[in-house]
Image 1 (cartoon, rainbow, N blue to C red):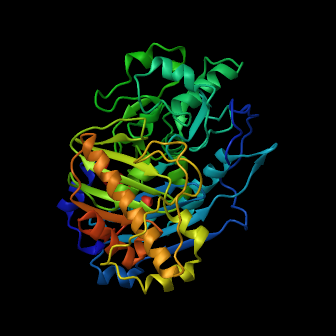
Image 2 (spheres, rainbow, N blue to C red; image 1 turned 90 degrees about the vertical axis):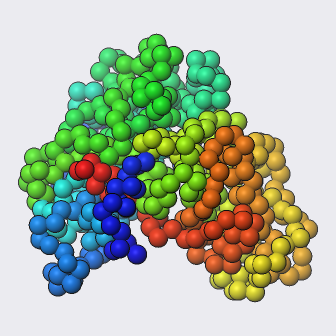
Image 3 (tube, rainbow, N blue to C red; image 1 turned 45 degrees about the vertical axis):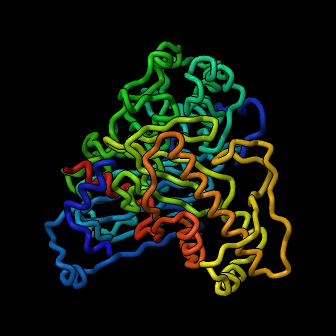
Length: 487
C-alpha cells in the first residue's frame, strides 16, 4: 500500500529517476495574443478533485501540519491530472481537468488550453494544503514541441503535437544524425524543428525551442530555456555524454536548443505573483520534469534492473529498466536515462484497440470468466488494427492475422489474449537480444491490467511474475520528481 512506503524506498525510486496531412508539415504561423490565465475556466471543462484527508483524517494518519507536500502534474493527450503526496508517498489530494477547446483561426489553440489547465489545477489544490507544498514538477507528452519568442516566452507557431509527423524534414535529419538514431523518425522533435526552420520565413534570431513540459514549467518559475534530458532525447540530446552532440551543435538551428538538466532538478522558486494568488509558500520550488511515459514508469515503483512495466492500453508498450543503453530505430527502440540506469522502451501496434473492435467491455468481462488461463490456446494470431508493425517485428506491410475464427467466442478471445501475450514475450526477448538487461518481473498498467485471466495467461507465456502496478498515474510519478528536487 502507498501509505507503507518508507522514506528510503521512496529515495530508491527517485534514483533512476489530430493527425496531420501527409507530406510537409502545415503552416504554423501564430498571431500572438495575451490571455489572462486568472479568469475562471469555462463551465464546460470537466472537473474532478478528491481530497484524501480532512483535518480529522490527517490526524488519524499522523499527518503533521508542518509536514511538507510535493505536487506533481501530468499533461496527457486529452487532459491533465495532479497528485499531491508526502515524503512517504501517501496521496493527500488528486484531481483532473479536461482541456478546454480554444480556437485560433481554424486550429485548436493548444498552448492557451494547456496554460489555462495548468492554473486550473493549481486552483484545484485544496486551499489548506497549498502552504505545505515544498516543490512542484510536471510531465508532458514526448516530442510535443513549441517554438517560442526567447524574450517573451510566447509561442510563435502552433505547437507540434506528440504524434505529428514531419516527413519533409526526415531526409535532412537522416543525413546528419548517426544511423538508426532516435531522431530518425518523422515525429521526432528534431524533425519538427528542422521542418519549422526550413518553412518559416520569419526572423529566427529571438526564437527558442521548448517541449510542452518545459514551457509549462517556465510559466511557474520564469526562467526561459530549461529542459530535462528525458524530453530532450528526441531533439538529439545525448544523455550518456550529458551534452548535445557535435553533429547537432554544428547546425544553424542549434541556437534554439534549451539547456538540459536532470529530471527532478530544482530550477528556482515559484514566481511571486503565483505564490501570492494561490497561497503557496515563499520557499516553494519548481523542478525540471519528464515525459508522461517516464512519469508513469516512476509511479509503478519498478526500481531495479530487470523490472519492467507493460502498458496494455490501445497499444502494447513495454519499458524495461536496464544497465545497458539500447537504441535501434528499426524497431522504434530507444533508451531514456534514469540516473545511472536506462529505461529501454518499445511499442507494438497490437493491444486493446483490436479487442475493442471485436468485443464490448461487457463481453470482454463475461467471456474472460470462462477462459482457463493455464491452458495454452492453439490459435496463432497477430492482432493488429491495421496494416503495419514496428516492434518486435519491423514490417510496415504486416497484415493483421485474426483467422481462423472458432465458433466459440470464448476460444476466440482466449486466442487473441494469448497471441498478444506471445508478442509481449517476443518483445522482451528482442530487448535482451539487443543487449538489454533480462526482464525478471513485469508490472502492468493500462486497462488490460484489470483482466486477471489475461494476467495469468501472460504469466504462463512470459514465465515471469506479473502483477498490476500499485500506482500507474503519471501525475504520481511527477510528484516523486518534485520530492526528488527537495532531497
